[in-house]
Image (cartoon, rainbow, N blue to C red; front, side, top):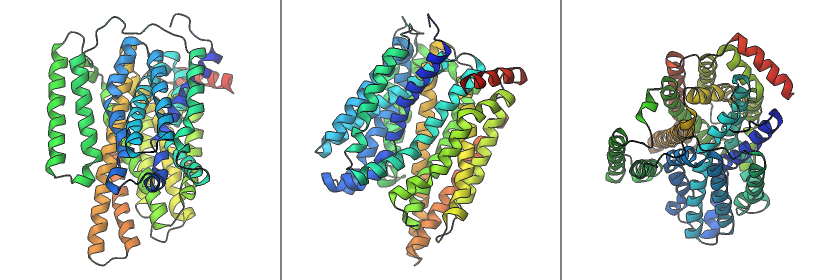
Length: 485
């Protein structure tokens, strides 16, 4: 940046960026609570209703890589503002939608805007905060927003839907989007694009975007169509062919969309594999524990949202300070592995929750450990992913990381939900009680999620380079934190 921002403006810029990201993260879960109301109001069939969610996921997953690279080429600030504008206008269209087609189309545009915002926000933060101590704390704030936003979305969705109507889960984005856009113009410097002057690899962009969209469609539609069906296998095969074509293009062009050498960066490659596994485990916890609370224990949507508050508060405490101190004291490897192991134990505790469970004995312990795990691990995982990347490829690396999270979460949730449903169906066929059969299916999903989290912890501990953070940097961290308090 030509004129670096002073400390106060940097932290104000971080708050604005995180508010924009929070709006995107909330929208991935806030809709779920309102789906029954949307179905009744607009006359969706059970099959068509899933497209209120799938249309968003399809464009979000498909455009993350391209959004990140466009940020490198044309400026991260410019792309962030464009993404916020797309998302806000699409939210207005969703809120005013009076037909199925309009709502689904607007959700697809929301996903496109969300992909662009998510892909470049991390790059903007990394470029704003270059000192290790400040960067660790800033990434902690960003990590809390990403990790805790989904839980907040369930609570907010329940409140808005029960108090007003489902339209307000989208309309509430309008003042937030306008405020974020205006504040970004005021506080974010319009720096020259790091990769300005390079050509966009159009062939690579088309093939990888099409490959990702086909893969996302195959995943989100897998349970309904059948994982071994001709449709699902054909979509995965087409996605694989396009991916192979994309890799061939990248190996031959002068200015590739994704330089293949990027994946030789050890920390980036490891962080992406760990991110896929962890996202699969965390999506299993979030969505399946919500189903357990609602369908087995009989909680209302608002009670489900309130049940996640302890985990959110714990994540806030660790993400907004303690995690940064741990990174500066121990590096990225030890906190990442410790956080993922805590999440593993939390998932294992959920795997033993009974049909007649209580919140204090059977829900709160697992929630507490998962909140601790997410609060500790998210910051070092993001730092690991971005630590070896040149500034000119930071947007692309951010897009790669977000794509890994999104694909890992979507695939993990689809597979684990399929395993849970299969076990429930088998038990129902033998005459088991409906609640017991549901619970047994959820327990299996939690066990597999715990295996994913444990594998991620082992890979992170074994393969990540520790990084240049140690006792000397700890003093800088302490000084940065005292200046913020």
